[in-house]
Length: 154
Image 1: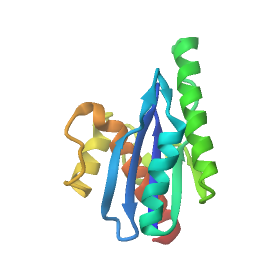
Image 2 (image 1 turned 120 degrees about the horizontal axis):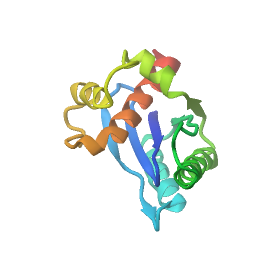
Image 3 (image 1 turned 180 degrees about the vertical axis):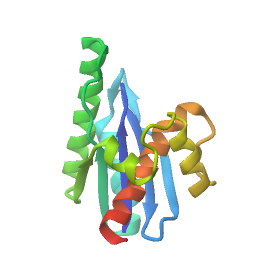
Image 4 (image 1 turned 60 degrees about the vertical axis):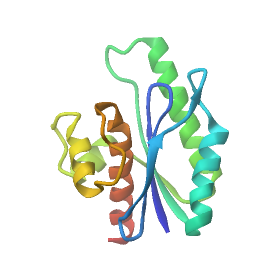
């Protein structure tokens, strides 16, 4: 069993994958082509890991528009989120929409700086490629996967 976290971003997003023992499997940025999520790439990426580990559960961050965000950037963000959610559904594995507040509260990150999720993920998985500040989406995705695993299987 693997647990996959998917964090939508403005044009694409990030993924994080752990196993049942909470070991790091993979993380990275979701591929985008011409500013749009590459749905086929994401589906094939998820399924390639599922084929190795037999089955999966997926957490997708439930997002909404942000105040003072322009209509064009909101549309781009919501389109990316919709594609990511659709790909999760197409895998036919159980997926859960989780609010940022829910998984961040679980990890004690409510009210903390954006970099706090990077630090938390680095402490848990030192082998993950989380070197740069821009890797916060990967950290968020890994922490969502951990939240999902513990929510469902302790």
